[in-house]
Image 1 (cartoon, one colour):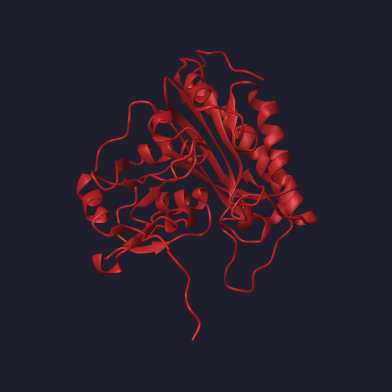
Image 2 (cartoon, one colour):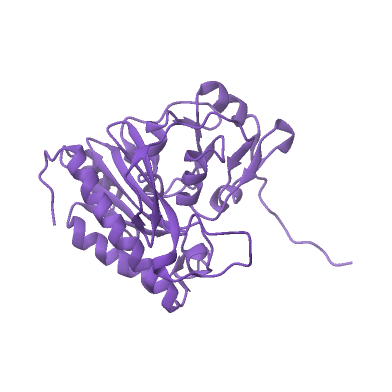
Length: 308
C-alpha cells in the first residue's frame, strides 16, 4: 500500500501510528503464546523469532515497495538504499522488533518502530514500546497481552509526542513531549558500542542500557539519559533520529565533533552499518566535547591467557 509522493507529513504520521498500533498487539500476543528464539547465522548477537518475521510481513503489507526494513534488507545495496532515500517521495524505514532478546526473554526494552524519510533524511517516526511501564516492584513476569502497559513516542514536523499505551494501543491522545532538563550523568551504552569502545568513568559519564536502540531512545527522550551513542545499522537510527532532533539533540562525530553528512545514508558503509564509526547524540557541541573526552577506542584482544 503506497502513499502519494506529496502526502502531507501528518497523513504519513497517521499511517505509521496505525501500523505501530497493529504491530505491537500482534507481537504481544505471540510473546504471550510462547516463542522460540533462533539466531541469524553464526552471529549469536543477532536474534530472531517468528514474531520478527510476522511484523516484517505487516510492514510490507502496510508500506509496500517504499520500504527498507531489517529482515529483508540483506540484498539491498548502499546505492539502492541511497536512491530510495533521496527521492522526494516518502520512503519508510522499519525495524520489526528492536530488542529481540529482551522481547523473547520477557524483559521491557523492546518495541516496534518505523521512520518516514524524504529528500535524503528521516522526517517523522513512531516507536511503540508496549511493556515499557511494566511493574518492577515484584518478580518479572509476562502479563496477558491486553494488560501490558507501555509508551508510544512519535515525532513529526519538528515536534515530539508521547502517549501511554495498554495492550499496545494508545490509552490517551498524543501529547507534546519536551526535552528533559535534568542531568543524570548517564549515557546510552549498547552492546555494539561496548565491543569497539570503552568509557572513562572518571570523566563523570556512566553507561546505562536496557538492551536495544528503541529502549535507549526512550531512556533519552524521557530524561533517564543525558546523551547516547550510535554505531548501529540504518534501520536502527532512522526511526529514532526524528525524535532526537525534535527534542533538540544533534549528531556529533567522535572524536572530532564534525556534523553529519547531508545525506542520511552516508552515515553508513556498504553494508548499511556504522559499526566501525561512532556518533554521539548530545544536547549541544559543548556536551559532545565533554563526552568525547570520556570515550576511548577499545584495545584489540591479542593472544591468549596462559594457564598457571
